[in-house]
Length: 392
Image (cartoon, rainbow, N blue to C red):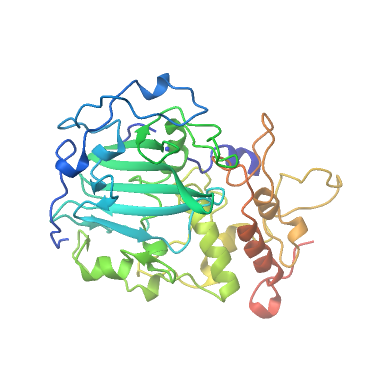
């Protein structure tokens, strides 16, 4: 059961799918000004070997007006001065309190909202973004004592029912970042880091009515969020509802529980719940999203769906070498060894093996910190703390 749901679970990015405080307008793609320089167009990304980063073409033409799937990162509107890495006007950095695991890569995120627009948060669990919204996520890894840029991903809402997705791979010298659709299985000099193919991204992003995953209520309201947080979005008038009613406070959206509970619940929410394990996702029988109720509150630990759908719930998937008569559960209080969620997080599938790892896509290394956090939570599930006795 867990194996089958993991197959369809979270993952890496595809080509296309389906306030008002007015920040200065973002330069349109293709009109980035003199600082942007010429945009690389070169040979198609799919024609390059996937085992190496793309090289900058010799005579790049300028960015094209109206291009909604630009080949060069400098044509996406992220930077006003690409060489200096100066952000364009209206682009704001944000940091969710709990981050999706990406094999230890450092990440920076930005968002651009069209001037005068708002995000529709009538459904607090599922925000709807205005047409023209752009989000970028940059991935870096340590290299020779410094951080090396590996890739920058773009999500761009170009119509009410369409998101353009693109992955830009940085050259080893950091001079250019060109779109690669097929992915890079082994980034040279990056300690086994892999960039997923764009078509893989739908496996995670399809779990939302609108595409963004990390820019959402719980992750931006929780302690540890940075940059453009939920509180600042409210203050700036960038969130709205169809009813025009009041918005929940950041405190009402906080991840509940002790620090041990909060850490585990937040990591499971970000890595599993937002994209797949929720009422409208692909894994509805086992939920890990922290849902916001009609009153605009997350509630307490006992009300969390992972508490209700995982604790003492039998699991059909069994760890390798398990005795045939042993019983396993998704989460068994005070028993990490018989908690299959922890086993799935602690493994990485061998090539060609049935998918049982969690998350199932775009990761080759175990998130040891997350495993330790969930293990600590399981060990703290005592009756005195409000948990049921362990099932037999």
